Image: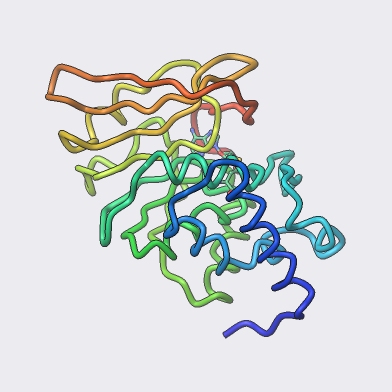
Length: 214
Ligand code: SAH
């Protein structure tokens, strides 16, 4: 159990109440956000703003998505107990930890080595055990497929076919799609050849880029 101040716990409770007013209704998602210490996934100097609804800069010019976006993407996944989830873009590891707290089997991929290394450290500190990979998320993890759900946390120029291939029939992929602005997509794999696409407004994510980077 991580020791933390009442201040951080209090701010986190306020964030959960705020997310309710923003249309997050899935109690399991709210509960997970209420449990994950977001302030530990960023530089200590940013602790005071960790529970504000804003994206926060991490290593390598990347960002942790703002809490309302994390909550919304997670809610769209409609996660069930013990589902197998693939996340593209581990980043700080915050979203990974939220998925883990939802009692899922999490597989997460990060292309940037410093972020991957930092995420491993924080998972160890929190004693949580997602399956982490330093690899190119465009390829997914064919050896571990199929996945019940896939969550992409960077903005993709188009829907990656390899990821769709690794989704179970009936499963969802939640992915922001676009060039500079990203439209939130929830794709249902209806059959091997058919998909249903729903869209949920505009967001701005860091780009999904090919290949690993040191
Ligand atoms: N889920 C993260 C969000 C980080 S921002 C969090 O909660 O902090 C998105 C991340 O996607 C960045 O870390 C970026 O390096 C990573 N990314 C971009 N393209 C990728 C790719 N092809 N494969 C894996 N990760 C990728």
